[in-house]
Length: 542
Ligand code: ASP
Ligand code: MG
Image (cartoon, rainbow, N blue to C red; front, side, top):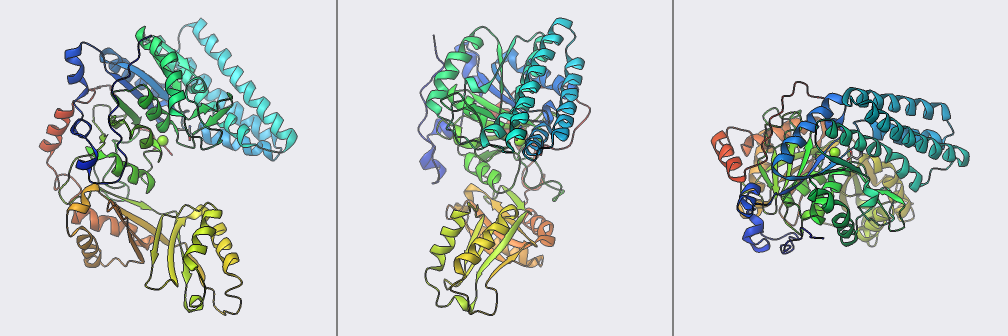
């Protein structure tokens, strides 16, 4: 069997100035059509559709048109999420089972069954095909029911069962999308990623074994592609080497797509979602925010980590070593070209690309005069945070070891503060005042841009703008990679802070770039052109 494997480009590990790390061919990917026009060979695109993109029959209809268009000029592997809201309902059913509430579980399964039946009835007209799909769905619901019955009996929800239950959404949506494609004349095959993506056994946050996954994908998917069949693969899931189903974590279908893209050496991965790509800021908070045409892997990873919810934080990991371009595009406005994410990105005026804000975070302060004689405050604080697996978003330390500010997600606030108070209880037993405090009225804003390091004055301009606009700062930290500057403000000041910096760096069109520049950019990278008529735009994905 022939494989698609080409010479893999040198590793694109981070950080470091882009020009040192990335060979020219990685930095400026030739456009996909260009590379193949001469070779007479079709490019390979992995296209992932998120929950809202497959939210109901009419959305799936649009998805089918996008795939149909793409499959004319390229080989396509499709990855699908569960229909929007379904995974949340399945997770709720799992929790209800643990508390023994079969009635609620049955009600959830009843609703979900109806929702999937309705979509199948609207999309599939052949009676034989509809009943085949109906039987498949019934089997999956019976499997879900058995898992819940077992959990109710034991009153224990194991991570393995939670994964098996939450994976049902993708296992239901995948055959539906495959059948809808066949209905429109696109040969397709529904495939469960348990056959393809080999992971470790870390349920709920599994990581892939890329070599084993590559072998499986080459053996299973390449023959289909060679026959002109579009494989439609479940996002979000994989299996441990012993075959037990695992999940990659909530929102993990993005990661599924880049894993498949990397092991198949795809020419592009496109994440089809319900927004126009990565934005310069959340448009609900900054009215002038606009789509960024190109960002680097590093910038996109920082944006994903610091609160721009468009990408799963691990998405970039899979493609970083091979330099495959990743697009984020809008299923509901497929004529817009979205954001292209490349190893080195494109330079932008002042180096600042985008802003993010995390509102559901808290500020924990460890310090005060009582800490003057306490030994190893830093070490003990970090060990304690690690023990409760607190994800630290920002750290800032005053001149002495005795005053430390930490920002953590709200969900971890209580257990982190309790653990720290416990750790230092003995040292502070005679202190009348509490020295470990928690402030939940804050937000964290992050300024992201890989080229900030080479543009002097970015920090000065950032804080100068905030000063002029009278936004008070509570804590500040700059990433040592100089790719981010983060600071803490009162929650009520979030919008003012974002607007102030957005204005200062002219991030909104047309001040920063002209439309002609954007058009020129898109012309050079020749994205897949899709024109599908759309008339409604659903709520954003969660
Ligand atoms: N369906 C899964 C979730 O809701 C995975 C995904 O949509 O990416 O988390
Ligand atoms: Mg998502």
